[in-house]
Image 1 (tube, rainbow, N blue to C red):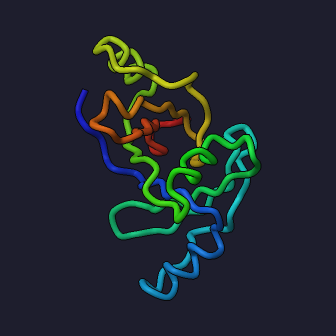
Image 2: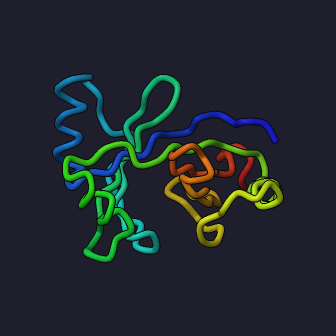
Length: 139
């Protein structure tokens, strides 16, 4: 397995609107589409395009959102995860499990509508890492 394309950097925020205001003011950036809810993952999501990747702004949908603890620890928000593309999510999962990396939870559908899973930060140098089947490869 080779390291795939960086798809996005996930940034946790208490307010997507406030974060978008910062990206607009400092970078002249606009969201690539309207924010949307991912109830199965407990977050609201909005993407901002950069020339070589995206910024994924993630806001908790409620008190039981998986990013609430992160925001409690880092009240201003911040980098939550990195996401890399792979051509085959099933092969990638088998590869990481075979190497002893801890996969967090089941493979599920992510914000881009493609299968994803996460690798434990303790196995990735302290960085929560999302593995995503490339939108070009997904059916």
